[in-house]
Length: 116
Image (cartoon, rainbow, N blue to C red; front, top):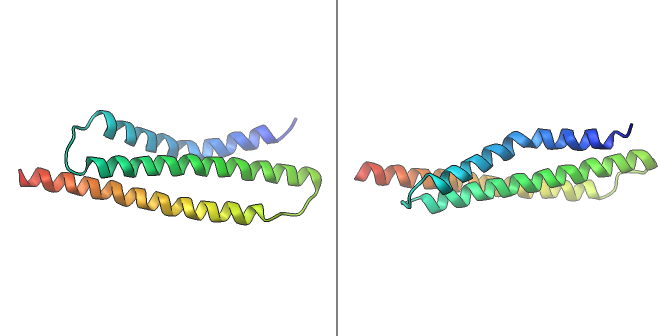
């Protein structure tokens, strides 16, 4: 049996909790909150987190596929690993910006609530 489907499912299962948490956070902010100070920042933050999680999943799948092909052909690792690493670093920065936006939106909402 080919190991590629198991590798792909493992990569997807590894990313699934983060994807679900980001999707639930975005859904909660989108559907269950009323327009208020900080809501836009929180929505953008959750959206950035979800987008970066999806792209990290895609990069993980590409990496697993490349490793599988490399193992079959006996080839040496190419520059794709450097590109994937740089992409993961960039996505980490985007996720960090998303988390800051989410916290900024929450703090604006709490300050507005305390002031009223």
